[in-house]
Image (cartoon, rainbow, N blue to C red; front, top):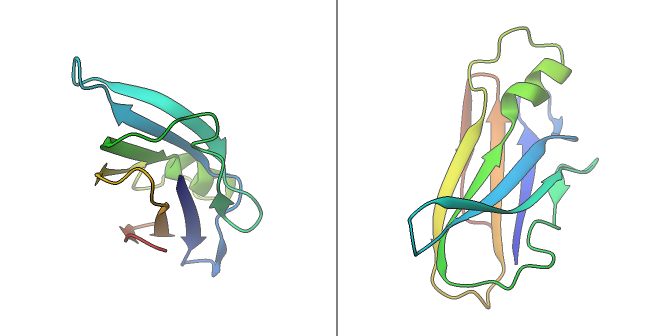
Length: 113
């Protein structure tokens, strides 16, 4: 299972309503394949990205529509239109939580629990 949580550090609130896409690299051709989409809830969380997907080892990528989120919050020209976080999973039976800490001019991430 892969989950995420987005916190808007500049506003001091969870980033609700942010669109997120989850992809995996197809081993056969190295292309990215979308396997899940959704939007963060009122608490900034998204837990349904892997619903209906059987987890396998591989390289995954989360893409966050940070530009759309910032525009919805009143920013005219966000610096980062999106944030992409790629990561490798070797043990697909584990839970992987990948938070995003966000401000209009920077972001950070880590492997959560």
